[in-house]
Length: 334
Ligand code: NAI
Image 1 (tube, rainbow, N blue to C red):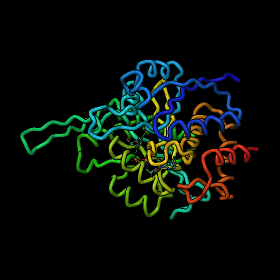
Image 2: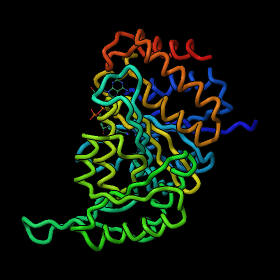
Image 3: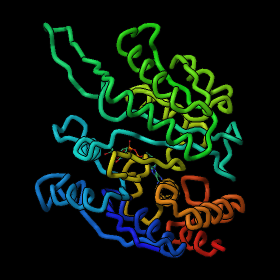
Image 4: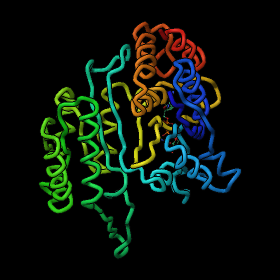
């Protein structure tokens, strides 16, 4: 079996702690991976004067595979977020967030199993804004055929690979007839190449209401950047929040797997962080690499620890620290 190199981007705050835990569990699962470190975030800023050095971008481009911890972004500091910069420079056009119920984490629903596919490169997120006259601001929503087609195709390909039955296009084309209309056209065209997968269209506000009432109605959902930003957090809320939800940003040649929570400055350095989100992202990475036995091994061990409920970190109402939780998962591996 060939060994794949993974670039580890620790990030800030609890980043190094959750990365270290995840790496130990990947090693215990005997995943054929080789790790190299590269810097991102505050530590990189101190050493290189930028939160995303060229050497880091080069390393990820070369390995084609990275795991990333959260990075701190100052509000209104003028510094671009390292996350956004990394996505742009590597053209990581698809944000992928599978959202599944976690055994032992009590929420309103027990069998949530959704996937949010979010376009990552355009829409209102392009940040093209200007002041027309004092008191009037214009913000431009950019939607292109190229980006819409590739994200819709990505969603169908993902559905096919993972045995999913339905892809829903989420839109507001009843109001934004040109921009969201173009997105829907691209969705319809992509769907023709996947006749075995049901293609459905749903207006974004209706989707939000339906999701909180009947999340089991949906399967894979594909949408523009801003709707994806909001809907993906709504979905995370259905299963217990950002601490138990994995994520990935994927491009044509590079994939970055990361937790979606932040740097948790209030608990950083105290050994209290819950590594579950990053660990689940690493399971996504193993599946992406078709390392199915190792992926299932970690997933099952995590399920066992959660189901037994004896070893839980503080954020989930327990008293275990990061290393006790990591040890429990390694011990639960069969
Ligand atoms: P946050 O997610 O860091 O923290 C919110 C709350 O959740 C805190 O009480 C924290 O202790 C807790 N928490 C988060 N992750 C946890 C974990 N793994 N285990 C246990 N508890 C956890 O969000 P906040 O405070 O809004 O942001 C802090 C910093 O993180 C900011 O600088 C922000 O820009 C950055 N951030 C980075 C992200 C990324 O790199 N992907 C995503 C979100 C925020």
